Each structure stands twice: as C-alpha cells, then as structure tokens.
Length: 157
Image 1: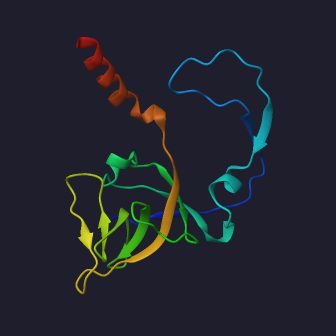
Image 2 (image 1 turned 45 degrees about the vertical axis):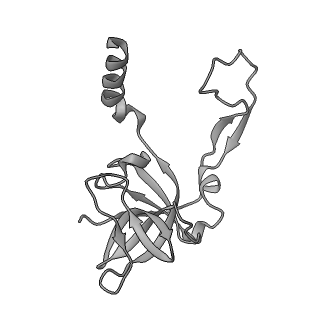
C-alpha cells in the first residue's frame, strides 16, 4: 500500500468569494441579484485546525462513495466516528481508507467497492481509527469521460 500523503491545515491568506444564492441542481433558478461574501475554506471544513489534515487518495476502495484516486480528503482527528462515517484507519502500521460500520456490537471497516472485503475488528485484525473524513474535494473535470459515457447511453435509449 502506498503511503498516505498528509498536508497540515493552515490559515487561509486569501478568502474565496461565496455567492449568497444557492445553486439549484434540480431545476432552473430564475435570475437573481448575487450578493458576494467571503469564505475561508479552512474554517468551513473544521472547527479544530490543530486536528485537521488534508490527505490525497490512492486506490479505489471507496469509489461507491464518490471518492476516487487523487481526490483530496479533509481528515479531522477531533471527531469521533459514527457508523457510516468515512474514516482513515491504521492497520498493520499503514493508513487505510474505509467506512466505519458497527452492527451487533461488532466493528468493521467497510470498502465501498465490491472488489474489496470488509475488515472486522477482532484479535487477528486490530485497527485504529486515525480520523474522520467530513469532506472531500473531487476533480469533476477528471470525471468527464465517465459522465460523457453515461450521457451517450442515455441518448441511445
């Protein structure tokens, strides 16, 4: 397994404009006057900067959750995982990305790709939850070819 690349969260020197109007993904929105405010993405992704890191994804075990290779994850070590959260775990001294799942008092690290198997915490497979992933940044342009293939199939139907 490749080493997880971690980047320490810093303080934004430049605030990015944030439009006050929401973008509607389900229907066309009538034209509106846009009021601009500023957003600090560091403040948006975590309340605890000392416990927040960014990590680059390698591997494809979480593609079903929309996390692909080279996506950027926000990893917050101050959060306690709940069942269903995506987490960074440590197993056999290596970082792994999975979803944390509990059922009937048992703990699992679950992949979101059928090519991978769940990992149950027991005597032989101990793992540590290193942090919770509350946000991810994905490159939509990198997904163009898959999206275009889906559009082609829809038009043929």
